[in-house]
Image 1 (cartoon, rainbow, N blue to C red):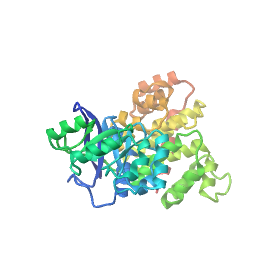
Image 2: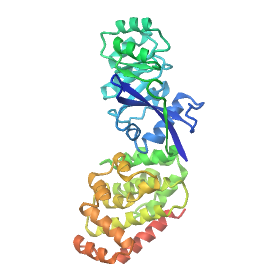
Image 3: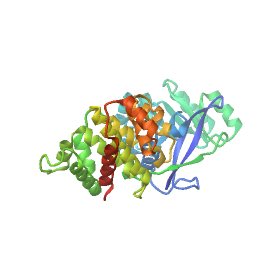
Length: 402
């Protein structure tokens, strides 16, 4: 299943691409679906930002995204990178003290704001100190009306963006009036793109990987997420039961279950659960391979007395083939995942001790015994590889049992 998005380029005066406006679509017809603005924004961010980031859709140029009142006031996704995203405030958003406070806060955090389809109403004047871009529909107003407004706001440092530019004559006149960015059919129509789609639940799980990369976990946040999903709660308790920390004490709450596991074990659970859910609930041999690799690398790290938090060897094995499961190039995928640098280097170049462990895992997996012996000697301090691999297989099977 795929998510659809249209992107329309925004051009500078010299006709080079400055950025893109991203527009949610629900199919290949390249038309806006019959849903409200909040749902459109939410779907766009869930389906595209949380999987790989809007940067992958814009070639690292600014992404202009519409935000409605409810999204701005109550559900703004603070995981968005302020360096890559321009927050467009829709013309339908009511100007209010609450919205002004939000704009002030976002501005202080480094976010760039745009007034979309600006209507010249003086009620927006107090917002202008926090606004970077003013987008004006040049078909809605004549040039005299636009000129009068621009004189009124000339004291503010604003970037003027002309929307719906359709003729070369319009383009030249608007440049003379001070517009520096341009969008419209004169330059390009929205271009349809599609990307493998995640359900909101799956996107939520993938976002938890970011939580697992933090030095300290927010157990209240994680327990709250699990409590909203019966299947997730069950999997968590089963994982606790399968861990070395099982049966230390009776489990009376999900939070207690998490605390009893300890942060390294819990971080393993979060990562593998996110990965498992990317397989669309279908049997997938690649998922089994990922779990076996994860546990095999983890057991090797135990022999080497590595006790990283987060558990780097486990994550190296787990993410060794996730790009195949989500059908994305590995470098692009890793660019957007908050994994440690040493893990990324191990996955991309098989460098460092983690890279050697991954090489050993892959060699043992394919029965390349000459390479296996050489790597075993290079790493040193590891033994009983056949038994270790069997342990990894048994562990993976226990995790996949529904």
